[in-house]
Amino acid sequence: MASGNTQIIPYSPPPPSSSSKSTYEVFLSFRGEDTRYSFTDHLYHALISHGIHTFRDDDELERGGVIASDLQKAIEESKIYVIIFSANYANSRWGLDELVEISQLQRLILPIFYHVDPSDVRKQTGSYEKAFLDHEKEADEEKKDKCQKWRIALTKVGNLAGYDLQKYRHETSLIQKIIDDIVEELNSKFLLPISKEIVGMNSRLEYLISLINLESNDVRMIGIYGFGGIGKTTISKVVYNNIFNLFESSIFLENVRERSLNSSGQLQLQKELLNGAINGKNVEIISVHEGINMIKQRLHSKRVLLILDDVDKLEQLKSLAGEHGWFGPKSRIIITTRD
Image (cartoon, rainbow, N blue to C red; front, side):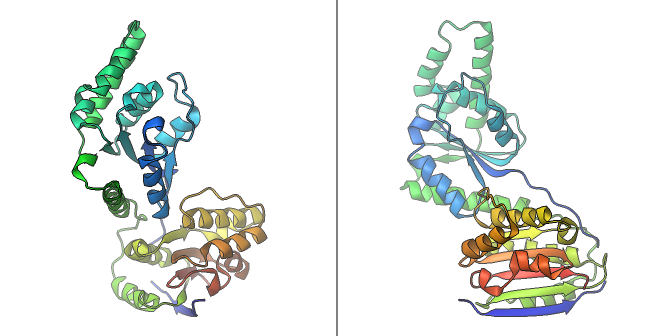
């Protein structure tokens, strides 16, 4: 078990800002029968193991060309879309509808050409031509219009910079490249929002980083205290943005005091901590006591960065980070408080 270290520092003189998250960081679009139990499965688990909250549609039933409401919601609330173009991708009508929806969003789309020539996707030739001959057979005007939308989406996404499996010696090499690129994208674009008015904060930031001491193997808890509105939240966000990518999981829980006025609020904070720390899986807990036990069980071997913003009662700390031993070696817990 890792040793523990606790530091309390005062903080005196920009106000906190709120952050929002999409439901999913990555949405996987693929043809089930081609890659579900091979490449897509390997890529999905690689994303999950890197703490990237990923949507994979596990419903293999055709939907008659209609995108289910839960799938539509997942598309709308994702940040990055990975499209796995395989030989039979264009056979799926609902898969093509899904692609049309994705292609209309102004977000990052990463096409993967899996055992298919990119030009077949762009120009609808080869196996994609055969698929469209079937789609357009005896099609009425409405179906012809839909087919044209599918073609436009395939051409648009097929022309984007992506990954051609033929250029990689092994599938594992391709998967690692995709993971690296996605991690870099997430790290650069999904930081906590910070007020620009941080003049004079550098010296305090340097002191705080020195206390955090990233090289130390122990579990460290650092407390920052001072009057409200003097910048404690801001400096903790700056710290988070500077070091979060060095941890297996990073969680920022804001406004703990306001959100812990009742047991349901404490329960929700525990759920957010667990969901953020165990690879984006949706955790269900029914009591604060159960939440404490699950935090101990799930996080004791993970290197975690946890920031608890505006804590004002010991009970809040006990339900979220009661002891150093709840977290793995090199974990860092930062608490801001007025007391």
